[in-house]
Image (cartoon, rainbow over all chains, first blue to last red; front, side):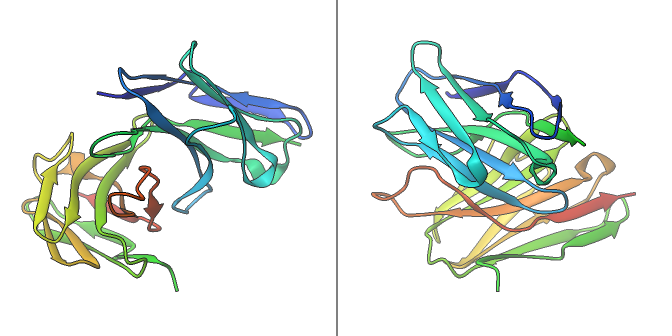
Length: 114
Length: 115
């Protein structure tokens, strides 16, 4: 079975500062990796995904993530955050082979302070 | 119009009442899911369906049941609601086998409060 651990439940940063949201996963098989974002009072939308190929993945709104197989990590980064990035961010994993079901981490609440 | 529509968006009910949350989608996807979101716990899978004749339990199915009425419709029922089922519920869809990567497309959520 797959599992995901998001190491920080809350991350406060100042506007225009860089941010990194950490995600580690556990799986005995090959996986796909995802980051979803949930803005206040909204559903989840896909931020970016790693399926194969380049380990550096770019997503919407200036976010990027790097897949590190040896460290089983998929950390999300943005070099300069904006107030509008305030949201909850979820890391998720699904297996490549077989019945793909998405398993989510606990979420990280990103708060941007002016 | 949203690709994945959930009704109702908000519901307050009392302990012991039967509640149905409905989901419909226009994405043409075969696979549909119900997740529950609780603060600090992320999203947990309640039930999923890979086609109309296929229903599977997720990690927290106790106290819930589902019905897949058509490819586009997947409803979640609480036969006798209890307060710890107060949560935000999400319906989601994904593509069929062969093109599926696990990526989900979500509705906007149904907030259920059980008093």
